[in-house]
Length: 182
Length: 352
Image (cartoon, rainbow over all chains, first blue to last red; front, side, top):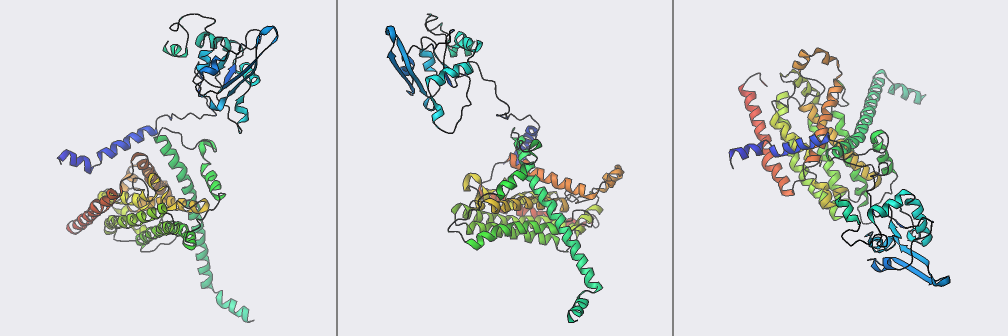
């Protein structure tokens, strides 16, 4: 053992260095966020609770094509349609099991009409499974709650431009990943 | 008639004198225990605050202003918790163990001089009494480990037994230098001897002893980096794994009281107790107006802060490392300290 090493060992140089570090951090500002009191601002394009989009007339945009349900990796979207008057397709039920959803956003990407959306709302804990089974009515009211006005327009303009609106190729399509890159 | 006569023989001026003295002692005990328990409560708060900020967290902050009522919230919670006793435990020992631990920690407070003249029992073997009580505390730990009938608790108890016995020697020897310099085991006399000593505190000439004492005090109170008896990552919670509710609280209080007692021993034996060095009061005379208890508490708080600081910095030692530090480093160092102190005391007359 060299002399320097011996001296370092006798005087606990390493331990003293560590203690100096902890003393320094004692006077730095804590990084803790006091969550229920202080909330982080939600980033644009956040994938939270689902909502079914409404058009300008306040009608459901969904046509019941079932692409979202087909794409869904956890298969948690159930769509039931029937034939209405003058042979139009009527969406009877549109249901999402929120507890099974993994929030991948594939349904939003798949939808040709921009009908299914993921809102910025993420605080929806409850005591039973029932409130997490989203029916068509609940999903439509979610749109009114979380996408009222400019927010809803911005959602499709900046992040999820549906293919029926913009027939650009895959490279030009506005997607979540590209917004992040900007 | 007979009764009156018996009463008159009991109530003599002498017996009244004794009764008054007992009453005064009881009041002193009440004051000391009350203040000590308040200190224990806020020692936990302060520890969590200090360690929290050292780890860039906030620590307790919700209960009261900056979490100041947290100790009381914890106490109330522990008091109302269910008291679970394992079915196969050794019941009498299980009940007894936390009491032994807590009582031995609290009774150590009786010989500590808080300021000039304020000590519950001014006995001549104060230091020995402290050693005895801290060894007795180990009984509480070992018995709790044994009585719980749980392997984690048992391992914690065994570890604690060997650890406390090993470090007891180092701690006793580290204080021998102080005894030699002060020429007394009475803690008040040790403080007075330090006040008459040029440096005002024995930490300067007894730096080796002080270092050994700090390391041994950490081990004796089962604090990091020597908290093997209650190593969370190895033994769940160590010797008090099976304890819940208020029995657990007794262990908790005992541990923090033990820390305060160790800090008080450090303050009394090495840092000059309630006095400050004469050369300081010579330069700044107004400091001598400050009551002694303030200096004593400041020294205790500083040592407690060292406890927290080390806990926030150092990881836990391995068990063989713990033993080799105790037996191969601390005990030889303490013996060397005794030898040097004795040598200088003999060679240089009047220096020590």
